[in-house]
Length: 161
Image 1 (cartoon, rainbow, N blue to C red):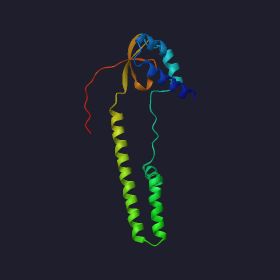
Image 2 (image 1 turned 60 degrees about the vertical axis):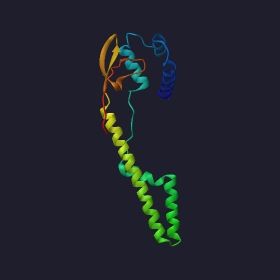
Image 3 (image 1 turned 135 degrees about the vertical axis):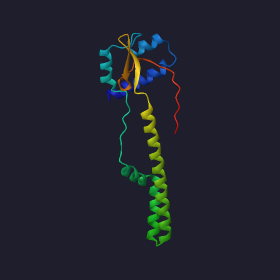
Image 4 (image 1 turned 30 degrees about the vertical axis):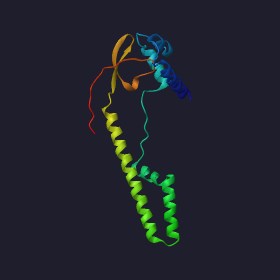
């Protein structure tokens, strides 16, 4: 719970700091123009955790099966069962085929989108220049903490999909 509260507090700071003067930013984030000390970085890593987004991977079959328990699909499945119970076999097969097509198209679109996101994530920069103990160092982006002073370089790049 503490990590969530601290994260919310940092998000609130970021809204306030958007147009603030540099000195105010340093004060609110308890940082300085010399950067953070290594001890402070380690302390903040314990509080906030790594600068990373955890993504829970699900097996494809589980994702596919979950598509069948959405509200609209459940209504379509109910209509198919009713058609079967009243003896309209042709309607049952038509409804079932449409349901399968709908679910498979949705699954394929989601699969494509996830692959694009993975590709983009792999192309992201994995390290950054950060000022710590008054020295510029190259560190992994996972080790960034609130209050770090980073160097941003303008780089032109193209992504072809």
